[in-house]
Length: 114
Image (cartoon, rainbow, N blue to C red; front, side, top):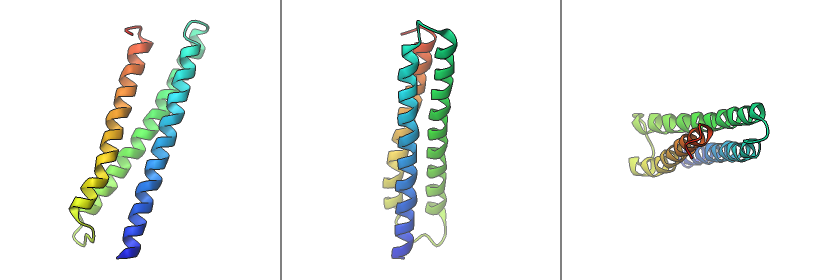
């Protein structure tokens, strides 16, 4: 049982680390795209698309983690308490909301509303 809990925690932390890395890369690319806002329209669009794709990858990884944790939670031979898995699910849900907020503001800025 201890080995399985360790494996679950390793999966959880590795996936959160990867989501954080892709989100950080996306934010840095989107900030760099602001530099080209008035200089080159093509460069600006290119950097925004690359930033949004990195943000999409981070969101997809997050959805995969949530799906995996929900599968483990509903499994018959679940060795973990549902409370523990619900606690683990809280952070990925918050990260998804933050990623969608970043995406929303990116499009608002891109279309000149802000």
